[in-house]
Length: 204
Length: 204
Image (cartoon, rainbow over all chains, first blue to last red; front, side, top):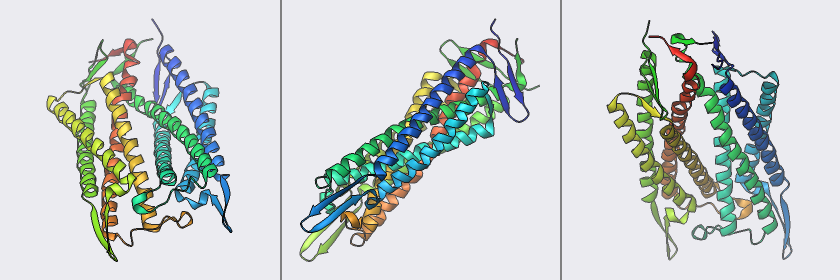
């Protein structure tokens, strides 16, 4: 018979030592770490691509410079990606420290904090990308009825780089959406065990 | 001692009959139903407010009509809210049927389907609102550097109604975000119990 031990301290701390659980936990920790590291790198790449994005165009005698601050949605995207990169980096460090300790020590308040943070980051990233994509689409195709002219025919290099930045931010947000599902799993499975704790006898 | 029964069929069906569990399940079902009904009504309200939004303005000899199809972000918001309202209505019916049956009969494939659907709806709604809010902000304040003029000084009534529709959609998406957390709870707590099932003896 396989060995399974379930322990719980009064501070809502649950420690699992089962074979299946250990394997699942190891895989989850590794996936979470990879996703968080990817999110950090991709969000940082998006930030750098957009912040350094600039193009100068000579229109008759007037010199016109396009920069990301001209488009408020890109400023929002930069800020959102800065916050997401810093948050993902901190969480990656937490994952590495957790992996080095080896055991899965999980308390509910921490799990709730991580779940809430991950949810906030995922939704913020999706909102920033949607706003940026909307502005980008107006820049590419224009809104004829509203007389908002397309600009990407004039500032092609600027638009391409901004699109690259938005694509990188999109990949980062996909990673964050998956991470938020993992943290939801890590939090809510605790309720599957603790609900039954007082009535459960563990066989060794 | 309180009574707790945990049963699981080979088809990954788990049925809970505990006192605490029953109370939690009843509260969750009620909250979920209220949130899903609110999301349906608010998404539908947003859709109606935006689709019926129109304003005619006489500019010298030209008659200019503002309508939601002039702004692609509003079209996206209408489509997204239409899908969200239909989905939330179907899920509300499922909740009512589940409540009438009384017992919490939950299988993992169904829980995964509901979780995935809820997540997709929540992110889609947030994206639609962000895109619409971005277009709205350009309409209210303009993007001076890009020569995208503000329009809400001319079409104030149209803008106010569109803002009302977006606010209603925002409330619907908040409800959907909470609902997606509830469905995550309903899904992932199943993993807290089934992981331990083969090694757990239940005391009655």
